Image 1 (spheres, rainbow, N blue to C red):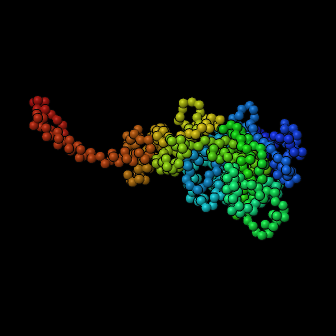
Image 2 (cartoon, rainbow, N blue to C red; image 1 turned 135 degrees about the vertical axis):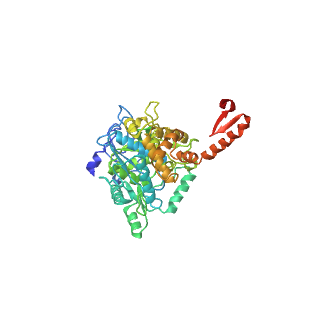
Image 3 (cartoon, rainbow, N blue to C red; image 1 turned 90 degrees about the vertical axis):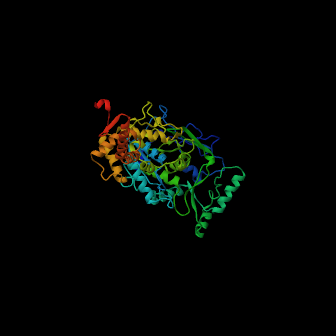
Length: 489
């Protein structure tokens, strides 16, 4: 595994501890020198001191181009959904961007299932997500059903790995056992609220003696593992989409990585998984941006190289709020059932926050692989326009060959019971007649039904009777045709 980790490479990453005040005697006095001390040294007991610590952790890109992709070895990206519902269009776009980035750099697209929420995760939801990704054409190189060298690819099957790394952090002093009860934690939050301070853990067990810890262990008191966060300083990263992003460490507080029931917490799982799966670039939604602070601290504490980060903007509703069910269809499965083509969905999702710099809006998946670049992803939110999606689907329908379109619509008509056969001369002629008037496959149902239910014979008979009735006006009717008496004479 060590060899694999060495391949991820982040040549842009430089983690430094820079004193911002008169440093304690154990730190280098020159802030220009890269510290030989790690966070492990600072967290360990031999470096505990009453002197106030203040340092910065920074991750920066090479100076030649802030958005240029630098990597050592193979590019490896991952899409890691939680199987607690349907695949949202926002998640599908994240998967698409990861897929395009991997394919455009001859890399690997990894699918990992984050099912640590045992109460809400279901096998049905997982299967639905896998089906939706396959329908979109986003086939993964490693993951469920495919395998790979870095499995297992479900978090619920990786608990042994998480516990191993948690014990490693406990031994190094980066984490400690916290025996606080829920009541004590709630009281801390209330006090912080009264003082108008962030609701961070006060560190009651951060400096407990070995004797105090052993006493609680003997009593069988439940405990969590808390990560020891430096009290002062900041974290700075260069995000490939958003540029420089930084956080102050004093807003965080010591956080839990393992619950009292032995289950790992999300940020700990993600960090261990990304590192041990040799993920080189983490491309995910911007709502995960705050998680980067905790994850960066864990990366450094475990001695892992951090990947590149790229946080994609949210997809917004027309009112510029976060797109949700109250705005209509939001899942890939819903759009498939509504008659949308996978190629149209892929095309439209790619344009939500990305463009190739031209006026062109029509792309196949192959075109997107050729054109995609992470530096052209916009950091502003993209509005989901269902009218434009419908128009784009119509464009992709029209681009299909007559044979493919007839097969697609014919199968639809048979499945819905409109016709008993899905192919033949009638299907071909009907599709040719109707194709220019539909934007969705489902539109063809109503158009064909209207055509078949039209009372053609009754209408012709009615016209015939009407024409014959005007004979008294100097015309006669014969076989449905009108002749004037003058013309006959």
